[in-house]
Length: 172
Image (tube, rainbow, N blue to C red; front, top):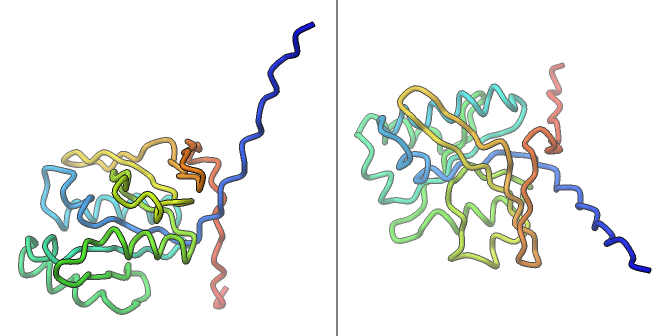
């Protein structure tokens, strides 16, 4: 008698505690200007998870391609400010991928990026990425998050099934 194949239970995804934006990827992903692309992504992210902190990681070359007024605004966000995302500007010659993946591991961050980080396989272990599409007026997130498991396999998790660590505001 043949046995039915046993289904392997899908492990629970890690809890996310922050949203980390691959700034170069967002800026390069649409026909509008850099600031407008970031604003479209930020608007959707803040509506989706208003309590999670957001950090934007930018490499130096992407920063230099932005207009002067956008550069000035990004520089003012390098320290934590209530209501604004923290901007991490990487040094010249350093791709933002490495500090972004390290930060994701450190804080349990969900990475907003269309990058699959194949050139950083070891660093992406247990990272979760949310892919997206940008058109002129809309930010359209994927309906699933990719969770890169430590054993080299990845799982797709419906965005509605993510566990989010809610931050408590002491003023509440």
